[in-house]
Length: 124
Image (cartoon, rainbow, N blue to C red; front, side, top):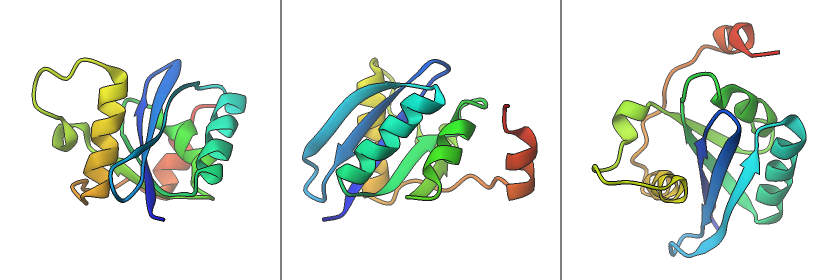
């Protein structure tokens, strides 16, 4: 099964949505952003059989998430300008669902971030 995950990432939390190829929800959950929380997210996504994960390049908050997930999943980092849904989007769960749907339908253009810059800018 080709399951995908969209993440709506914030400073202290992130919202995950997992859909299968039919668009059925398998997971809608809030996670923290501490390393232990991100590891719980990684384990949940592995357990659900997720192959691809997408998120917006929001400030620097995406960096630790990418660092934890990059070894297990194909990651798509989206430019927020190009992924914004129509006005009226109100909840973080809806944002995560929209990112998941956009990933599933191949609507996300990757942001380019050089590996050198990613490592240099990674918060410690």
